[in-house]
Length: 105
Image 1 (cartoon, helix red, strand yellow):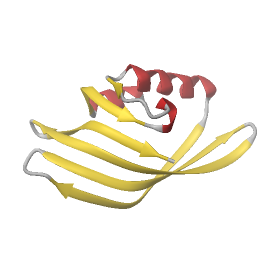
Image 2 (cartoon, rainbow, N blue to C red):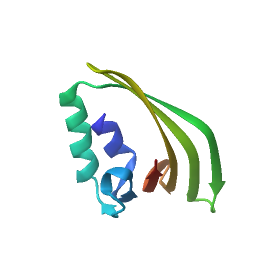
Image 3 (cartoon, rainbow, N blue to C red):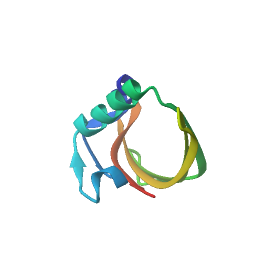
């Protein structure tokens, strides 16, 4: 949900994803729109994280790499997509927040 997303990312978050067509997107507006659109479409989605790998880059930064399987069900049936993701996380106080996400299909 969008509220959980906003709690767990930096306001200056950046991302490169298939939906951005290779462009670097800054801030949260792009993803807020995607969350709202998915809610309106009433898609049922299940995500599975496969083979996560965490690299600590000091006390306040980490890189997390993994494969994400996304199952979605709509009126036309169920599909599964596979994505390779890398996320850069930054510790802010006592919470880890996402600073950057790179996702490829």
